[in-house]
Structures are given as C-alpha cells and as structure tokens.
Image (cartoon, rainbow over all chains, first blue to last red; front, top):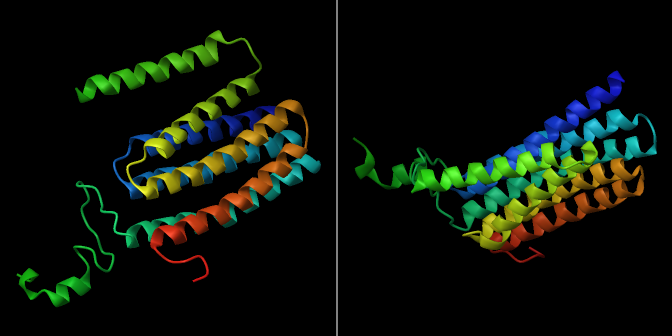
Length: 122
Length: 112
C-alpha cells in the first residue's frame, strides 16, 4: 500500500514536469530557451515517471526493462541536446532580443572579437 | 491584447484539466495518459509551426522522450511487458535521429 502510494506520487511528479516542460517549449521566445525548458522534461519528467512505474512493478521483468529505459535516457538525451544546441549556434540562429551576454566565439561579447576590434575598449 | 491571449490560454488549459480530472469517469492511469497525449499535441504544434529548423529538431527530440513515458504508462495500464521493448527501441532510434538531424543542421555531410 505504501509502495503503491510512493509510485503514484512519482508518476504525478513526472507528469507535472512533462506538462510544464512542454508548456515552456510552447511559450519561450528563443531556440536556446526552448531547449533549456525541454531538457527538464527529459530529466525529471520521463525519468521520474519511469521510476514510479519501477516502484509500482517491483523487481520483475517489466521493472528491469524500465530501469534499462532510465539508463538509456540518462546516457543519450544530454548528448543529443548538446549536439542540437551547438549545431543551432553554428548555423547562425540569433539569440532573442532580451539576451544579456553572449560569450560564444563569434558572439557579440566574446574575447576574440574584442581583441580584433579595439574601438570596443573604453 | 497580450493579456487577452494569455487569459484565453489559461481558460483552455483550465477547462481541459477540469474535464480530464473531475468529469471523466475512468481509472487514474487513463487520466495520466490523457495529459501525456495533450503534451504531445503541444509538441506537434511546435513541430508544424516552428519558426526555425532548430525548433523542429528540438521538438522531435522531446516528442521521443514523451512517447517513452507514454508507452510505460500504457504498459502499466494493460499489464503487459512488451510495450517497454518498443520504448527502448524508440529511445535508441530517437537518439540516432537527433544526432543525424543536428549534423545536417550544422551544414556537414553525414559521413564527415
């Protein structure tokens, strides 16, 4: 009974994180902000939901498959998110207008551009 | 005008949540599956109407992760283990597809 309650609580948490991450994906103004909101939906959303299912099912075949799914998600999703962010920055998609700082090489606040443009120094 | 649009969105989400959690007579797992399907619908909006190609790639990546959680819930509802096999295969294929799309987006060839 306690195990059932804890599993349902983890599934509630995962569903809430999934929904809020998707809402951030729909609402935020920029590619990078949307990516930052979407990776929350990976790490706590679906992984928490799978952990809740593992608690509900126990150490059965289904439970071990769910643990394997958590391992796959934790290994593969940050790599994919990093590759997408790097590719979108290199393909020249601009930051949104409310951005404060941009330290990527080629960005407006990077050290290399400041070395090549001495008029920026006070 | 902005606040009117914001209020319309809040009212739509509130009506969906009320109909899902208080009106619909179904087991609790069916309500969870409904919320997950609504999330997938919002992600599909970003896939279809995304302003830039990177938005669509991000949305496809997140849609794969949502479908993994959805398949786990469906497997829990029907008490069948083979849905999790589909979820594992979907996770690996989604990872490879995201890396390939990122490489194409960066402007390189696939064998680079």
